[in-house]
Image (cartoon, rainbow, N blue to C red; front, top):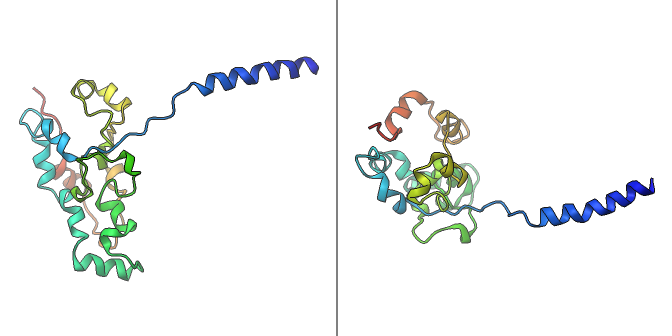
Length: 182
C-alpha cells in the first residue's frame, strides 16, 4: 500500500507538469464580412459574396430595427428593442454576445447573418495559405456542415415568432455558394 502511495505522489507532479504546458483552446475572433469579400467576390470563387449580399441573411439584422420587430419583442415579454434583445439577435446577427477582445475592427454586427455565422469566426483561418488547405482551415476554426439543414434549423424553427415552414432544399438552392469546379 505504501509503495502505491509513493508511485501516486511521484505521478502527480508529472501529470501537473504535462498538463501545465498544454495550450489553452484557441479563442477564435470575428473578423467581419469585409476581409472575406476580398477573395469570395470573384467569379473563380463563385461570387459567394454576391449570393450572400442578395439574400435575406445579409439584411437579417436590419429587420430588427423595424417597429414590427419591436412589437414582436414586446409581445414576447421583452422590455428591450428587438435589436438589443438576445432572443432576437441569436438568429439575426453574429458577434452580439462575444467578448469584445474577440471582435475585429472590421466586424459589424449590422451585417446580420454573415459568413462567420455559419462558417465560424475567421481570425485563424482567413489567411490564403490556410484557406487553400481545407483540413488546415478546419483545424483553425472553419466550420463546414455536411448537412446544411442541421445549421438552418437552429434559427428556422417554430421557436421563431415569425416562423413559416420552409422547404430546406428549395431554400438552399437560393443561398448555396460552392466554389465552381474548374
